[in-house]
Image (tube, rainbow, N blue to C red):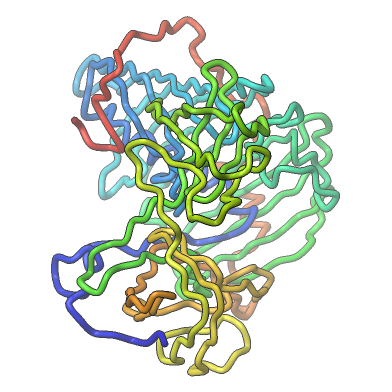
Length: 484
């Protein structure tokens, strides 16, 4: 039985009490370019160039800290940073090189010029950020530019990015060319051009997706908002209105997609159920190792299985395999609970909750189920970060969790041990409201705004090809935004 519970877990100072619930507003395709903007700004902030002025150093960053991911496998990048500022009134000039693994390795080069640091009155500051990244396995080349200015309390945000995944890179969204979109989802330009009040209470934006081979094939989104509502206008490839919506900026359909798991004393459960990385020093093939099974991108079995793997920060790990398991299969065939062991890391099984009931007062349903109805679950699992097993439903065109479990809910595992749940990530979908609320937020006003325009390849500035990467050694000066 799972229920609401009051105990020491919620006392001041416990990990349960200290852990924050993160939230993210979802606008679908119209919001994806702004998510890229937020990730760039987060990466710049956590790599610390404004603090370590006139420095050359190594920074290591888990990029999942900048994209609202609950993924246990870190998306690590080692950043070589060369940053300088001539004086306190000069711009901060930063050049960086870093490698990250997104299924396949990417080499990223970026140049930034921070002209004005963010302040309370100017939360974005002013900057230019140009970047280019290459897929090492498929030679896909992708690039983009972000420009932010703040003039008379009006912030201009311009991001233009071109992606080409036709050779196999997996960074394009959604990863295949859908017939529903007129442009090629594997070779397109995306952009946002926004004009926003510095307090964020009002603004307009134009978002576009354009085929790079035929610019007449496109989809466009116009956004216009005030403090209370946001109007969205979806235009087809001929700029004809497909649909419009009016949504609240204060009321949301909330879907909790991540939960932390805690002991009854409030300490966080952090089970390592798998390790993801790569093997091979040259071709860097992806690898997944868990206690009971493994996956190797090369399909190795038996004596050909790799005995060394590398985490994304370059750490080498030794792997051994249960000799009593089958040499032709990569899982625990003898059912003794272990297939693989990694030296120095204790691999654990997920915490299992096979069957039970969560009382109605501890949940909020997102579908048509009457609030207060107990929920009979089967086969829920958690490793302390992931919490899986809650079904998805479609609500207002969005795929969301059928229900949200309230913070502080007690749940018992298959061995009779009690745990506490707390939401870690909540996706917030703005609620649809009557179109009359957006009567003054017109598409015509967005089209008439001279500060907003469609973006082309000419809006992307090339990186500095003359920069020579400095030797910064192997000891990071900054790790996940913390100076060492």
